Every structure is written in structure tokens, then in C-alpha cells.
Length: 221
Image 1 (cartoon, rainbow, N blue to C red):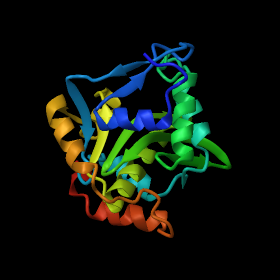
Image 2: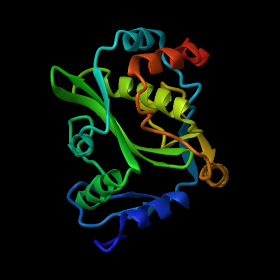
Image 3: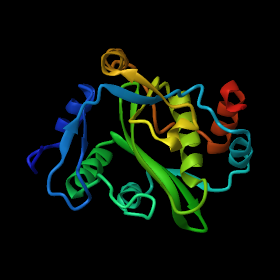
Image 4: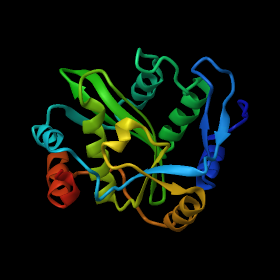
């Protein structure tokens, strides 16, 4: 459980120890730390991308942006929907992650269409680790496309770990798997000293995606 005295630095320290926060629901005044015995993971260089989705991604159906509306992404992720009537992002988590974003630690990958934010995801970067937090879609496949672009960016930027916390059917179609808490702690301990670059200034998004797909044989079913 936390209170408003927590700082962004406290959150970073907790993630480096394998912990992550979740509230019981969006209206909760407090949240709790989780440290599950099994951790969900995705392979950055070997993300499984179904053939049809791969072709769709190569058409660039969305304008892909990074960190242009972090607050909009986390607010969309926190919204209740029919398929997800309760979310774990409360006001405290929202404010802390926006502060982490302002300090350059938390990032969003965004899908825009006709000037509107229609999908995306956000997470926390430290060393060679990207801790994926949540994603959303207001139009079909938007969150999937954001995930592909995230992996392309992490791959090019030198990241080695993409943590998903838990497994779910949405992530399992991309080849998500579990490792033990002990293995996860060992891996993030080794990865924290890595020099990485999430922003990749000056790199064209289309070139980034094309290079990643060409290097990713797991993209074929």
C-alpha cells in the first residue's frame, strides 16, 4: 500500500527489485505492490506476428508517434470497457507515471488516425528493461500495431527484456511466456547496467519497422 508521499524515484527502485503497483480499481485511493511467482515476458527480437497482422503493419495504417500524448494514453488505458469493466490504474498510479514520463523514464507508443489517438501502450524503461504496463485500442488492431512498433524500437535501442507482468490471451498470440520470479530478478539485475536508447532521435519509423520485420523470422506463422 502507498500514500501520496511516494516519489517517482521510489517507483523506479521498486521496479528494479521486481515489484510493480496495481490498484483494486480506478477509484481506489491506494494501491498495492505485486511480486508474482511467475512473470510474463515477450521476446523482443522474436515477437510472433501473425502473417495477416504483419502485412497490415507494413501498410502503416496509423501514424505512429512516441511520447506525444502520454497522459492521453494512460487515461485511455484506465477507462472501463465492456470487455474490461474494471481497471487497476487509479489516480495515484496515473500521477506517478506522468511524473516518471516527465523525467524521461516512462514512454508511450501511440497510434493516431485522422488526428485522433486511437490506440497505444505505455511502460517504464530502466537499463535494458522495458516494463509494459497497459495498452488500449479504440479501433481494431491499434494496440497490436503499437506493440509491434514498441518491439522494433526496443530491438534497435538495445533493450533485452520486455516484461508483461502477467499472461493473457491477447499477449499469448504474440508468443508471451513465463519465467520464474528468481530468473526474472537475475535477468533484470544484469540488464540494469545496459546502455539503451528508447527515443532513437532522427530514425524514420518506417525504416525502423522494415528493418525489424526483416530481421524477425518469428514473424512468420
